[in-house]
Length: 171
Image 1: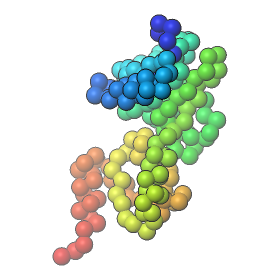
Image 2: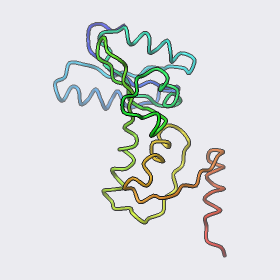
Image 3: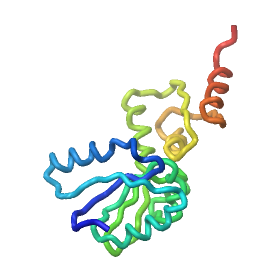
Image 4: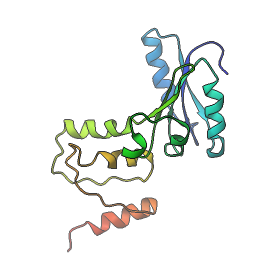
């Protein structure tokens, strides 16, 4: 439980490397908002208990979600925006005291915005990744991005190297 100060946090496993609290706390201070942003290590087997505990905390405003929870967290939130169907992963949970936990995904917009601004229509790109953020990017292909098809490689970096090598011009 918190100590009477509203807070939000980023959760993941690992999470120690996250710079999100530095960034968010800077802006909370600059804007004069009396709240804080934290990072919390949550292992995969602890996700259900985490949401139960936070939901009972009146100072908890919600969280951002990173690896490996972006897909699994869908099981613990309401999904009024149809994120499960459209994207299959969430990265943000909002909570109002006594209300439902609402899951959403800001990765999709974050993927599309820079591409649209640079007018990448008709340009080739390779997306590397198979997690929640990659799912969000794939969900936006064909929706004003100019990306019409996708090649998906398994096997992490080795799979990417195989895919990239297969796309090199012959000779």
